Image (cartoon, rainbow, N blue to C red):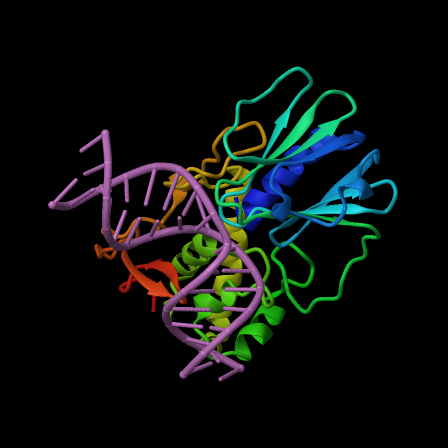
Amino acid sequence: MPELPEVETIRRQLNDVVVGKTVARVDILEPNMFIGDPETITGQKIIGTGRRAKVLRIFFANGSALLAHFKLNGQFFYDPPGKQTPARFTRIIFDFSDGSRLLFNDSRKFGWIKAIKDFKEEESAMIEPFKDDFTVDNLAAVLSKSRRPIKVLLMDQDKVGGIGNIYANESLFKAGIDPFRPANSLKPEEVKKLHKAILAILQKAIDCKGSSGKDEWYRQLNGSTGCYQEHFLVYQRDGQVCPGSCGGEVLRQTQAGRGTFYCAKCQK
DNA sequence: ACCTAAACCTGGGCGC
DNA sequence: TGCGCCCAGGTTTAGG
């Protein structure tokens, strides 16, 4: 559940069920995936949740925090008291004092959870959709500084936070921009269009509670799939007819090691 | 500064 | 059924 809409969906659902609860025990089945000392949060009460780009945050009353990154296949599942979801690939289990629990599953073991003793917000130049700094002007400034392909730049987490392969592809299609164009070649009108497309696509994906694509690894906190995959315009649709009116075909090419899906006729 | 490939791991889908 | 190959929502690191 890697990108911004999926992490935000999980955060909201998690917020509804875990705030106010106390962690009774942390069961670490895969030691490499837990960074820090689990004692930092054991016995501590959750006071809130947050998110920075693709990183989920859980805040505790003692000033500590848990950070979670799902990478490609990570999942959070919540079991109310008495329920035990049979789940494959469970790596870390958080037992709460009321008998409920939170499972961190990850088939590929790429994800991680980190316990931080005294959480402090770190300075960062990265701009992030839905935050105040994600303005057309700031996006234009970021893009103007690089000749790298626009799609690669959108996915660079040091520059723009939260956008991954799905939403970079979808946003560029919606904006009608060729993913291979140098970022600094975009005209002001195009940056404006792209900015609008990113926010519209991400918001719709959040409304859909995320994308469960072909592989269907992403799940909501209760195990349900999201529905944004039903709205994919180009992602994983190579070989199909372009959803625009051009009559062309959706193509796939590799870019920076990732699949880029686009329509050469609609995206200039 | 930029690019690529490989690495971290594992599962699913496809062709044969 | 099985095997080999390709693909995968992310990030980091090594090498050119």
